[in-house]
Image (tube, rainbow, N blue to C red):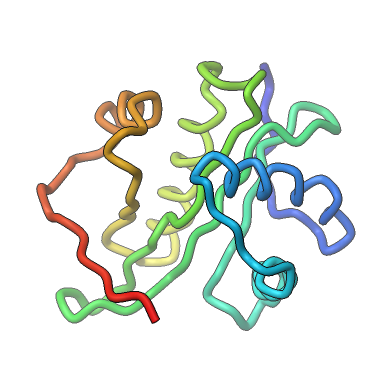
Length: 147
């Protein structure tokens, strides 16, 4: 499969939204439509540190990745947080997620970032099998306070 990984245009929201909804469904998350609208706006605003890339096979969108550049107190360069990664079921196991991760890493490195990092649920065995091949797991445990 020859993948074309690129930014999506504002007109391609109808391609993006089913994958975004698939991602939310996978994690059993429900968010307001206003949040989805604002996310789409941010992903398409060049002034925002949020980015979107899609993996296309021809005209078919097979996967998406959202990532965010952010400062760090540990380096002079930025880090990149790979926030969301999702592939359509038919494309799983075919290298789409690996290619999306690689693209984020390439862009992060080109931008002077020193790290790409991400989270997944401990029960997400399929994703973890890939992540264990392409990245180190540093052993940190996430804590959060939700408002």
